[in-house]
Amino acid sequence: GKNLEIGGSLTATGGTMTDMYWASVYAAGNMTVGGDVQVENEVPYDIGILCYGTLTVGSGRWEAEGNDYAIWAQNGIVLPETHGVTTPENGGIGAAVFHGNSYYDGYSVLNENGRVATHAVIEKIQNIKGDVSGDGIVDNRDLILIARYLVHLVEFNDVQLAAADWNGDGKINNSDLVQIARYVVSVQP
Image (cartoon, rainbow, N blue to C red; front, side):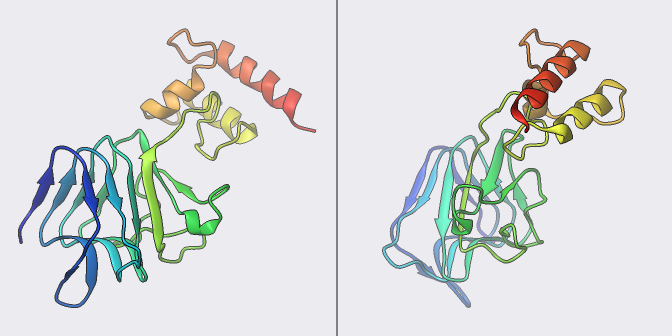
């Protein structure tokens, strides 16, 4: 297949018919875009982004909608560690946020109910100090993860390391754990 590689950004306002589907953005092979991707159709096509290879997200923000699928990638979706996926159809606020490949069923982006998402946003995850689980809140789950990290039972990615460094000294240690525990105790009823 033909690969699609764009160093900058991509805005799609039209569509193309593939062998079976109408798609706003289509790559017969791998697709890599370094910047933003915005699918801006008045009426969504069957698939917002259709890729018959591996879809690789750069540092930008991607947003796509489709009547059947927001994003469909046959060989997987590769995200930077700093990015996550939200599915605004679940209400935007509190929508499912997936890290790594846990949002992916083999072909398409899923919402928090395990159904295919018809609207997906891929963007840089906002760091919340103390939130190493990535669920948007600082609670006991984060404390347990940090304790497990301190005794070398788990490893953290760069986003988790930044979130765990509560005091900003560039190290994750008991001082961070105690400060986060004090925060958790002070905000929970």
